[in-house]
Structure formats: structure tokens, C-alpha cells
Figure 1 (tube, one colour):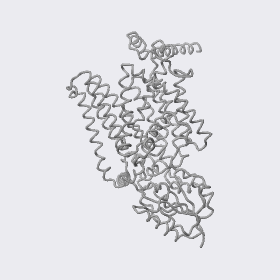
Figure 2 (figure 1 turned 30 degrees about the horizontal axis):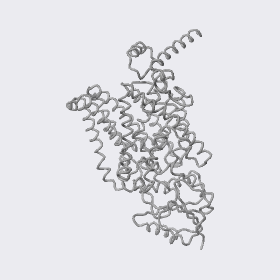
Figure 3 (figure 1 turned 90 degrees about the horizontal axis):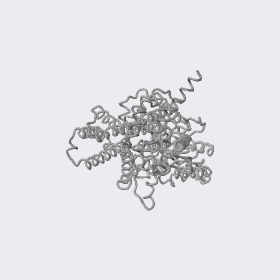
Figure 4 (figure 1 turned 60 degrees about the vertical axis):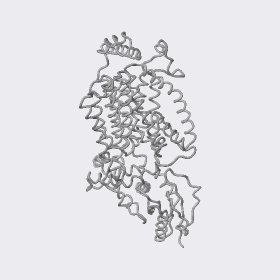
Length: 616
């Protein structure tokens, strides 16, 4: 039995050696290699091996995405997902009066009477997003019991985590179809499994992981269409209908999916230009090949325009997007460029550079800088070699076109329309899968090009400091893995709000009852206070706490009047915590004594001022 096992082992090792030798010669188009491929293809690893490897990537990816899933408190956008997915509304929270935490948290209580119709109605009338994901979340969260009477945070976050894990085998399919290479597919799946950006999207109770999944599916259709355009054959009707359906689902998930559609349109125009350069015949654009493409474009436009009236009629659209607007002054003109570059880098590598301790930040920054000085030449060289390969050149051009046109659209929105899309790292889902595919295609070259073969073909050795080939690929993957752990531990892509730290500060500072007051314009500000109320409830704090959401329209004094009237009605003593309060307060708090807040620590998302209101 031992002899048979050894024989099988050495036979399999020989097959792998032959396969590796062939793939190391990728980039050449010699007849010898084609003959070698013909003789070798019947001996390639069996399909079960690919399934096994995909299972490994899936297990790694879903394990990372489910780790520490509820350790980080939800922030305002996640609260909107929770409330609207339950079929509830923020309108039930009273304004301009002191309310108990339980009243503030009432929209987070599961509502058995709520239906999918309630979810859709509340969303399209009070929010700025299409309803598909929220409907799915509504059905999904019904499977999880409430926690302390509130909706399960694990239930809400597990849905995007599972969807994010589903993108791993899907990106494998995209890589394999695009480059006709299982290796590219596996490298794409492996990098997607540990991508810090992918982990970030998957661990938030939001719709971005689902939108990224639709991007992968749509790009797969684009790749298939590219092949048919190259071969001048019509796109199968089934693929055309599938492509339209995927695009419709993408727009129904997030309106920014239309940016992906715009990048695909740019690529198709580029392909048309290439074909015109070679054929010099305009009649090609009236062939069955292009008529199918026109049909897909028409169907996609119709599916997208369905949402236009709903989007335009939304009265809350401008208020909810104010944070992303603004003109540029001085050096502020450069910040979008650095924000876009930072997000691009963090798709691959992100160590704890956001830590509050310099002893962590400085070494992390040095390691990341060293890593990119070493890795960027490797990745660029891999792309260059793929561009030299006749069969792969067009696919590299397609994905580069997706990425560059997407970044160009972001900068056009930022600098010409004064809508700074670079401020929201999550919006980069529109081209994130294309980055993963380009990374995988480059690493595939690195994996199979040994130093001797490159020197023989006049190619400079890939890598510095003696790290080349498979070792370089493994090191890049390990950097992605450690970056994923960074995100999981909230040391990268940190939450904008830390209500847990703010509640701890209140408990340590105020021995008397407290009133937590904020100015209110939209449900975003309600979510800020919901985070604090939720932490108080989870901590089972015996402290008597009240909240005031002082509504503010155009006149900021309305919030001041609401604060003054509320302070007159409350029994003293109590501490007043003004949190993100953007209105004049001098008259309202004249009977209270301001505390020296400079000695207190800052808290992310909560700019506060403490007043002690004693008995007269």
C-alpha cells in the first residue's frame, strides 16, 4: 500500500511539474508551446482539485467576514438599514423634548406587522436608496431572535458577510472566463478572500457587498461580450438577457451601480474603435454582434430609468447628501486625489495606521511603504507581460479601462459637480472587482515566470531583495491576510462613531442624571444618538439618562429654544452633554456651569461639551 501511494505521489508531482513548465512559458506564441499544450491538456489536475481550492478560499473568506462581527458598534448608516429593513421609520422618534433611551430605540424593535410593502414605502419616501437589499434584509432578519428587545446586529451584519463570501467563487469564475486560466481565477479568489476592502464592505449592515457581487456578474457578461466582439459572433440571447437582469438588479441595489455601467460603456466604445481601426468598415456596427450589444444597452437603460422618478421626487435627497458636497479651497483641492489613492492601496494592504498609538502607527506605516516599494514593480511588470500576450492583451485593456474610467468619473463628480465621491471609500465598489482581477492576472505571471526563463527572454528579474515568483505571491497574500485582521480588529477602516467610548466617558464623569442633547436635521442625527442609547442599554447602566433631539431647519435658533425649554422642565441636579450641537447655546445654558472638557478625551464621531446644571 505504501509503494502504491508513493508511486501515485511521484506521478502526480511529475504532472504538476510539466504543467508548471508550460505555464512558465506564457507570453510566447511559439508552435512548440501549442504542441506542448495539446499533449499536456489531458493530464491537467482534475476538476475536483479546483473545487477543493475554491472551498478553501471560501472557508477563509467567510471565517474572516464573520469574525468579531458584532464587536464594533453600528453607526448611522447601519441604523438606517436596521430601521428601514424592519419596516419601521425614524418619524416615530419625538423631537424637541426629553425622551428616554427606550423611546429613542423604538424603531429598532422588530415589528411583526410590518410587510415588504412597508419597507419599500418608507425607503422610497424617506431615504435615498433603492429597496432591493432592504427587502432581502427584512426577510433575512426575521430568522434571528431579538436581543434585549432590539433587532439582532449579528443577523443584520451576517447577510452582507455571507454575500461578501459569495463573491469569492464568483470572482474565480470571472478570472477564469476572462483569461481562460484557472490559475488567475484561484489567485483572484484568494485575494478576494483576504482583501481588507472586501472585509470592510462585508462587515457592515449595508448593501455594498451585494452591489459588488452584481458588479462581478456584470463584468463577467462584459468579458463574454468582448470575446464575441473579437470573434464577430452574436452574443447568445441567454447571456444578453442575463446581463440585462444583472444590471437591473445592480441599479435596484445601489444607484452608484450606474457608474459601473458607464465604465462598461466606455470599454465597449473602446472595443468598437479597435474594431474600426482593423476593419475600416462602419457596416460592422450594424451586424448581429453589435445589435445584441445595443439591445443589452437599451434594456439596461429602461431598467435604470424606472428609478429616476422615485429618485427625483425624494424630498430628503439634498439633506442626506450634504456631507458629500462642498467647494474646494487651497490645498483641499488635493485631498480627493489622496483619498482615492488611499482607498486603492487599502484594497490590497492596510496595517494599523489608524491606531491612536504612535508606536503602532509608525512601524505600520514603514512596513506598508516598504511593501509597496517592493510590490508595485512586481505587479506592474506582470501587467506589462500580460499585455504582450496576444490572447490576454484585450482582457487586460478591458479591466484597465474599467478602473481608469471609474476613477475619472469619481474625479469629474468631485471637481466639476462638487460631489466628492472619494470621501466615501465604500463607493469604490463600482470598480473593486476589476482591481482584484488585474492583481490576479499580474500575480499569475509572477507565479509561473522563474528567474532563468525571464533572463532568457530578455525580461528583467521580478522582485527585489531576492524575493521572486511563488514566494512573492505568497508574501502579497499574507499581507492581505494581516490587513484583513487589521480591519476585523477595528484598526483599519475604523468606524466613524464610537458610542461605546462615549458612554464609558459619561459613566466615569457624571455621577448624576444626564441629558444628552444634539441638533437634529435628518435621521442621520437620530442614528448618532441611537448609538449612544443602544450602548447604555447593553451596558445596563443604572444611570438615569434622557435624550433631546432639537430639530433645526434654516434658523439655528429653533434648536436653541428647544434646548432652553427642555432645561427649564428637568429636575436638578443633572449634567448636560451637548453632542454635535450646532446652534447658539449661551442663553439656553446660562443657569448651568461649563466643565473643563479639555481634560477629557476626544471621541470619534461625538464632539461634546459638558455642563453641570445644579439646583438654584
